[in-house]
Structure formats: C-alpha cells, structure tokens
Length: 421
Ligand code: AMP
Ligand code: GLY
Image (cartoon, rainbow, N blue to C red; front, side, top):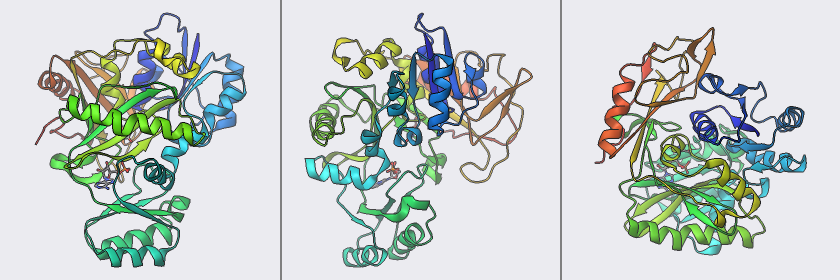
C-alpha cells in the first residue's frame, strides 16, 4: 500500500513510523514532511493546507490511504476532498472538524448537551464583551479567539486592564485575523491538565493512554505558551476513577452530541481536560492528534495503527484491538533558542546517526531538514527525544541522557519535563 501522511511535525513523524510497522505498507509519502521523515518516507513538496494540490498529488501517485493530520487542512475539508476523489482518508470531515475550528461552536455544544466545561459567554461585539467583563469583575478571566490561532489565541487576563486589552487586540486589531471576529470569555479553572486522545468512528470511542503536556517555554512553567515543550504518558493525575467519569460525563456524550448535530466525528478526537475540584472539565477539543502528545502515546500502542485507521474510516472500530503497553514514555523537545518568538535556523545538528536517530531513544523530527546526509535546524521545535521505560523515571532518564548527547547552536530544552509538583 501507498500511504500519504499530511503534515511536517514530530507528530507526523511518529504516525509515519508507526504505520511503517505494517508489512503491507510499501511507501509513505510525507507532505511536506521533515528531515527525519525524509530518512524513510518520500517527502513531497505540497503544502499541508493546499487541498487541491494534495488531492491531485494523491491521485497521480496512486495513494491507497491518506492520513490528514494537522488542524488547518481538516478544517478546510481535506479529508472530504480525498474521499470525494475516491481516496480513503483518516481524519474528520469539515463539518466535524469545527469542534476545534470554532470555540464558539464547541462551547455551545457543551452547553447544549450538558458536558462539563468552564462557564462562558460569547461575543461578536467589543463593547458588549467589555461591559460583560466589567459586570462580572472576576479575575483571572480567560479570553479566547474563536478560530484557529496556532494555539496562541488564549489569554489568561489577571486584571480588568489585561482582559480589556486582550479583547481589543483580538476584535479591533485582529492580531489573530478573522479568528478574532468572535471571542469567548470564560471562567478560569484550576487543577492539573490531562490530554486524552481517542479513536472514534461515531459509534465506538476508544480512549488512548493519557498524557501530560508541558506548554510553557521555561522550567517551572514560566515563560510563554508554546505548542508543547515535552510530554509524558501515562498522566499520573488520570486515575481509573477520573477515567471512568470522563468516559461517562465527557467522551461518550461528546460523540453522541456530534451525531445528534449531524456532524459525526470519525478520526482522532483530542480531549484537553482539567481535573478541577468539581471533577473533570473540558478546556478544549482538538480534531486531531496532539503534538507532542502523539510522540509519547504511539510508542506505547501495541496494536497496528493502520488497521485502526482503516477501521475508524470504515465505521468498524469495535472490531479491532486497541491495546497499550503498561510502560511509560517521555518526550523532551529540543527547540531553537528564542522559540516561540524569534529564533534562527540553519544550524547543523550533531549527535544523530544517518537516519537522524540516537541510541536508546526514538528521535521524532519536527523543524529539521536533511541536506547532503546532514541534519539542519529549520523550525522552532526541532526534535522530540522520546524514550520508553518501565516507569516514568526510567523513561525520563533515558530521554535526558540522549538529549545531552545531541546538540546544535542555541538549542533550548526544559529540564523539568515529567516533574510532578
Ligand atoms: P487552549 O488553546 O484552549 O488549550 O488553551 C491553552 C491553555 O490555556 C490551556 O492548555 C490551559 O492551560 C489554559 N486555559 C485555557 N482555558 C482555561 C480556563 N478556562 N481556565 C484556566 N486555564 C485555561
Ligand atoms: N500539545 C497541544 C496540542 O497539540 O494542541
């Protein structure tokens, strides 16, 4: 089989590597891919958001199955476009991807179907939003742009001034473009965060092993929010009791709600949860695998990923095994110094073998390119150095031992991934 994986991050590297374990897979196209994927995939110069170009390539190359991974092509309807062209695809339809594409949609869905989440109001008028903030007068308050904003459209405002500024920058200055034409203002929740990715075909929902992301750039959760600086799986806060409540109060009701709305979700549905004193609540939904959550979840998956993807697409998920190992995994992101703001690229990476790998770990590439047999930095998040161990401590020790042997100019990584306070 010829498989197409759309995207270029560490998440896509992890998915492609797992798919390759199936002996039926002859060739994997990565579009656009990265340096690490180039070592075992055929990289294709089509942008992940180019729906027409991607379908044209898939037809011409005789792709048998397409995996549409990132949020933006899903929200643009790339999975539908593949199917319309006769190419079976893993990934939700455009109608279902709105669960991530619009926070106004997802908040209203949760309210309508009684799914626990932070209390909120939505606004399409700046003066009304400011009046609401002043009337509420509770801080911190959380201000969110409606649409996709590369994970940056969320501002936790500590006081009225910060909240009013956030609303103004989103609604008037349009710092997140059209995403800011509507905003959500919601209650600030406290508690540990848990990421749960799940497979669902609209009839069955199977949660994957839980994970914990570390989103801030610096140690002790200081610095700016990033796409994620490291992950561990499983998440120690996700007890069997919490898992049971999540299944009953959140996961299955969300699947049913999407069906009731005529927006059946087939693909990977990501639940961003906060375990509050009043129980688990939804912080956000994503219509896709998380990055870098995937880099710790898939190494622990014992079942065949392609078989699961095909079953999800065909609506027979209940017929296939989805089993996880009882070990632990840890991923430490090595980033370009300055990320998530300004950083330089083009530095040679040392400490990797010809496949872009290192001993004792799996190195998932993100912002890298392969040139003349050497790997160079080409983005903010560069590598996700991932290890599996009998417990979290062993996985972290292996991962950090490898990180210390890999280097490039200005490299930055957190030293406290997996530390539980
Ligand atoms: P999101 O893009 O919705 O995942 O938000 C990014 C991050 O902002 C989350 O991972 C949380 O750490 C934080 N956040 C979002 N909403 C809330 C909330 N209502 N209360 C507290 N923190 C939040
Ligand atoms: N790591 C957070 C996300 O993928 O949205």
